[in-house]
Image (cartoon, rainbow, N blue to C red):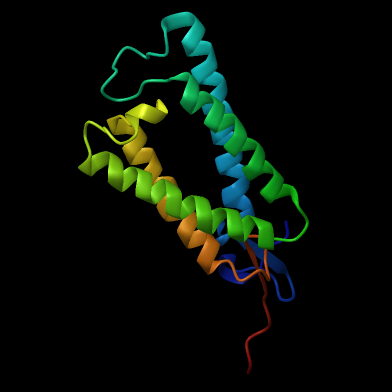
Length: 161
């Protein structure tokens, strides 16, 4: 067993701690996968149940949203997989702000009259999701300093006598 005294890591042992909140690449990857899954679910629901999960006030799928989610998923996954984290940071900042604004706009414009001509409808659950991923995007975009990929590495040393 490779453990130190009192549950502490042994001297010289490298220990990693993930911090996905501060990683723009992690944000881009997870949001890209989530957008892709949401687009797939939306497309399936369009064929199966006309885009509804049964509670239209919470979440309803429409073709405009589905196509937009496909495009954004591709952009997010591209930003996440480019070797430099600068693309992921730009993605996180831009789309974090956009999602946050959509979430706020959705709450204060319940009928979403400005978005209806675009074919977008923002229901309650979408507003909550947009607020959460928007806040995370802004946090990741501005807290990620580009020196890590969301992992903090610490090497332990022996206590001084």
